[in-house]
Amino acid sequence: MEGWTIEQLEGKDVFVIEGQIAIPNTYSAGVVGSRFLTELRDNCRIMGIRCPKCDRCYVPPKSTCMECFGQLSEWVEVGKTGTLLTYTVDHHRTPAQPAAPPNIYGIIKLDGADTGFMHLIGEADAKNIKSGMRLEAVFREERKASIMDIEYFRPHRDK
Image 1 (tube, rainbow, N blue to C red):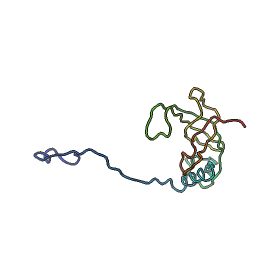
Image 2 (tube, one colour; image 1 turned 90 degrees about the vertical axis):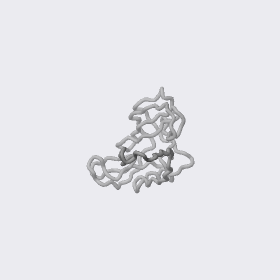
Image 3 (cartoon, rainbow, N blue to C red; image 1 turned 180 degrees about the vertical axis):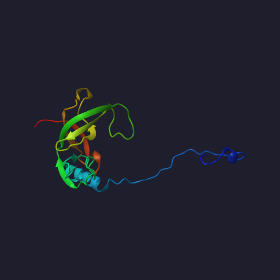
Image 4 (cartoon, helix red, strand yellow; image 1 turned 90 degrees about the horizontal axis):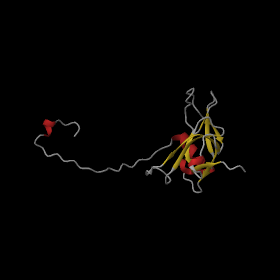
């Protein structure tokens, strides 16, 4: 027991009760994150935010530029397609994963963005995934203002 010395505990009954305490909480995405998620839900649009000083476009958006520390407020729509920068294949099941393994996670540089965006890759065999390949977003039919409104990215299909 933290805060007690052995001498203070001598001659006393000490009980340890194991268990869990449920602590409900609510996560706020903030002003910038909320607008990003609302655009996904309502319009199936992926929005970035551009720095007026150094012209970098961040996806997902943030409120401060990582290069010049300027305040960001210029919203821009970026493409639903992009280039796979890197990826990994996860074969382990955890409650936090939205799909059964194996899961392919990639960092995608969306067209019009200067940063990578991490998400699931679907409709693809891990053996055929390669850095540099083109991917496109697949949106869920029923969206809830969550990052999972983009169900996954799949290999781009030329139309």
